Image (cartoon, rainbow, N blue to C red; front, side):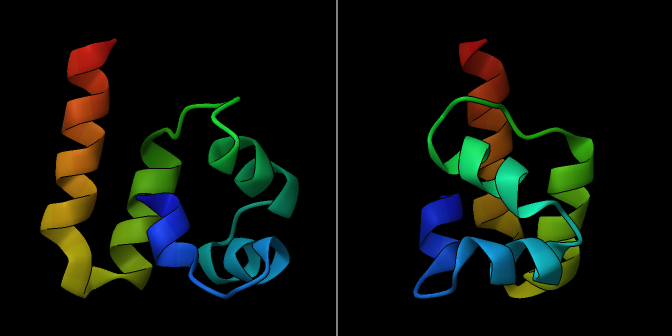
Length: 65
C-alpha cells in the first residue's frame, strides 16, 4: 500500500511529505519495520481521499499479527 502511495516520489520526498525520516520509509517499504500510529496519522493527514484503503491495510496488518 505504501509503495502505491509513494508512486514516483523519492523516499526522501515521501518522508518529508509525511514528516517521517526517509530511512524509516525505506525500512517500511522493504518490510523490515511495521508502521505504527504515527505513520497511520501521517498517511491519513496527507492522503485523506484514501482513508478507507489506508485503514483497511492497517486493520489487515493487525489481524495477521
